[in-house]
Amino acid sequence: MKLKANIRIFDIIGHIVIWLILIIITIGVALFFLPYSFSKFIINRTTLVDQNGVERNLRCNIDMFSNIGHIVLWIIITILTLGIGYIFYFYRVWNYALNNTRVE
Image 1 (cartoon, one colour):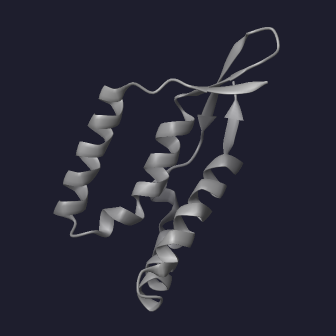
Image 2 (cartoon, rainbow, N blue to C red; image 1 turned 90 degrees about the vertical axis):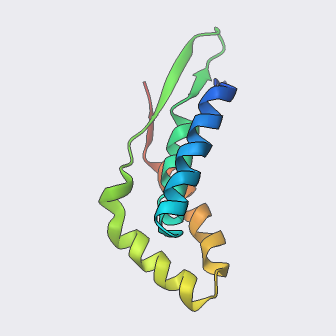
Image 3 (cartoon, rainbow, N blue to C red; image 1 turned 120 degrees about the vertical axis):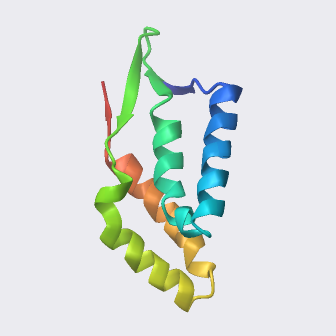
């Protein structure tokens, strides 16, 4: 089995533009929601290809707004560590997203 990402350049550009605008409008607070959106964006555009060439979609079942407690905790950690905690936060969100992904 292998993974195949189906991400078009225009999808990427649109995603980046939207998040840049949100980061500017929220004075950086959107950066704590970005990893959820980013991981879901990639996972939902990825397929699992089996030995017979049959493609099955991956679906990430996370909702960035249902994890407000997690986000608040990492905001505090990031502030206390002067930004270093954000690097770990990004990895933890990917871990969470992959654990909440299913194959259709």
